[in-house]
Amino acid sequence: MATPMTAQHGARGQRRRAQIVRAALEVITERGFRGMSLGAVSEKVGLTQQGLLHYFPTREDLLIAVLQWRDEVDNGGEADGSTPDAIPGPLWTVERLPLLVAVNTQRPELVRLFSVLLGESVTRDHPAGEYFRSRYRLSRQTMAQHLRDVYGQRLPSGLDPDAAATLIVAVFDGLQYQWLHDDQALDMEDLVRQFLRLIDPGWDETASDYV
Image (cartoon, rainbow, N blue to C red; front, side):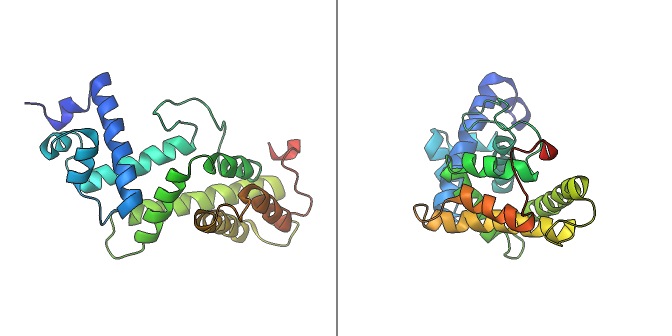
């Protein structure tokens, strides 16, 4: 009988894991994590529930795999599991935010997954809570350090890098919520560019100083 360890090795096992993760993404997007059952996921990929457990012993294990896969896509991977360098370099830099927004508008299912789980994760003992806390800490720290490298201890707008980093992350995620509700009314790329010019009136995404 296959074990969780042997099931996860080999090309066939990796393909099956990827199929399960994609199926879980669809179920979570439709129902949220609280409404996700292993039975619903296994049905989508043509496995028995016991067969799915060989790959992901718990719902929490599957949730973390979905979140990690989403991060891999943001860091240059593709939704089909390949990993070309789609967005080279660190994501949380000022000049790359419009590019990241542009890519996200082409994959609304991932934006929806992130938004669903982000909203749910504020509830008590949600298994994604620590993931999002850690993600936000790292995002703020990465962006703040980038801003210090570019501007020093004060941005042209007068903001300090820590405050600016927090606002950039908040605007980026908040815009996604509004876009999901009415994508025809919002041009996220343009709005992000306008916001960046608020924090730095001289901002130019093509300027070599930002690369």
